[in-house]
Amino acid sequence: MTSTWVEPSNTATALLLLGRGTDPASEAGVDCPGDLPSPSDPDLVARAMAAKLALGDRVFVLGHHYQRDEVIQFADVTGDSFKLAREAAARPDAEFIVFCGVHFMAESADILTTDAQKVILPDLAAGCSMADMAVLSQVETAWDLFEDLGIAGDVVPVTYMNSSADIKGFVGRNKGVVCTSSNAKRALDWAFEQGSKVFFLPDQHLGRNTAVLEMGYSLDDCVLYDPHKPHGGLAPEQLRNAKMILWRGHCSVHGRFTLPVVEEVRERVPGVNVLVHPECRHEVVTAADYVGSTEYIIKTVEAAPAGSAWAIGTELNLVRRLANAHPDKQIMFLDRTVCYCSTMNRIDLPHLVWALEELVAGRTPNQITVDPDTSAYARSALDQMLALP
Ligand code: SF4
Image (tube, rainbow, N blue to C red):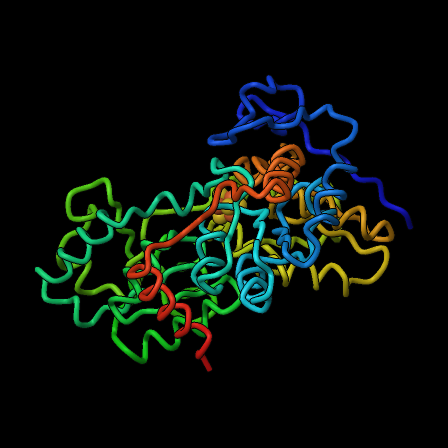
């Protein structure tokens, strides 16, 4: 059986693929001194190949699974954020790590690599809306509240990899741990051995889904701390009784999937398997057949029998790539409308070519550095994750 990929349609709220059908002048991102190649330059592929060849082993290019195909083709390794940070750390001889992903990932790579290595983000506008939802000053205000209530000693902070270095540093300073979507349960098991409550940052959905669906806590054990409300919008008793204090953050991409789209695809495609990422809302994850990290999604599709049908709730670039790699399976995007990560898509071929050619010219563009103090504490929270049983 051969499947035909159906591209989801644009909607009024959908984002255009950056660099296509838009004004190139507005696509320059920030801080790209010199000439950013035009997206229509027919020599972009040749220029990227030539620059990589000229740099040789001095450069190592990392490509996150949600990156565009035009960028992924130049990645020396692809993976999720944690795998890529480890790959960077395993290449101490590479002078330059070009990170085709978003800002917090480049920060993690800088924390895990040597001082001699330089981590480069081809477009500084490639941030992460989820990571930006937890700002250090807000998190410190919450912690002050826990101290005032006399519960801070019971609380263990856990932050998702998708957070800024500042937040990882805060968690390290307060004897917590970083987690990924693959090891969130193990991280929470460890945290509940250290204290009676967990303060989970910044993705409420991963925290709630892991606690309720994998660890047996109830929805009533979870409270949502809203940094934009006084006292997080919570009464002291709610905080005292809670097991999971969830930060009010979410992924703008995975948060878009809803229960009606799951019901709609089941009606439209009898026998379809619904496979979603744990950053999706609780009701979506509960209604799905399979739930797991990006790496889990890839492995599940690879292992699926020919002819099986899969509606996948994660970033569209990855789902399209899976559909193209498995034409014997019917692979579709869970939503009917587009769902790119707009910040991931900031990294396009012109920005990659620009960054590589700057390196060839002896200049270091868009270097991402984390200050030594923050880096040391963030490193301890990352090391704690690596030491999880
Ligand atoms: S997909 Fe979501 S969590 Fe990942 S970088 Fe984009 S906004 Fe952030």
